[in-house]
Length: 82
Image (cartoon, rainbow, N blue to C red):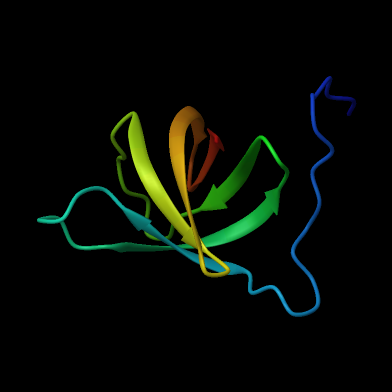
């Protein structure tokens, strides 16, 4: 399957962990997630068990905090843009 994307997505390997943390706001509990793939412009996340997410949230991954916008959701996987 071919996708026209602005940035090439890569799977986390080596020193980078495959896990991240979703922060909705200071009062909500954090949500653990898996990083399926990522690029400079976005990522595919896996959330088990499935949870509904707001349109905007922060992703903590590899010591970096990214502001995310929810782009799509399909089952336990969601796509976000940075």
